[in-house]
Length: 83
Image 1 (cartoon, rainbow, N blue to C red):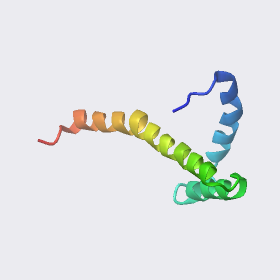
Image 2: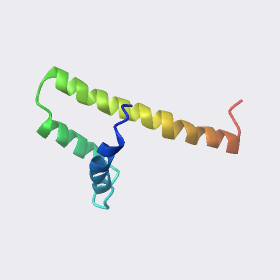
Image 3: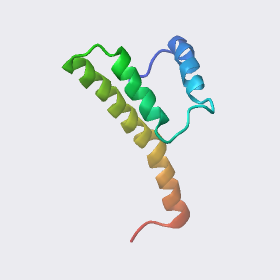
């Protein structure tokens, strides 16, 4: 994941915090927001769509690596591993 400089994070955290408002629900809303952003703001080209998908893919990989894997490791310690 490309870690951005600290001074840039504040600007982007405003968007992140807006996305956490109760009006944005889990089931489908984020999918809609990301798709609508792409459709409305990504200049149509193979390279631009590919880059946008790459950003989404890498975000998913970072969630899996840094959030999901430690969670699952904790559950293994709590409940025992599969033999």
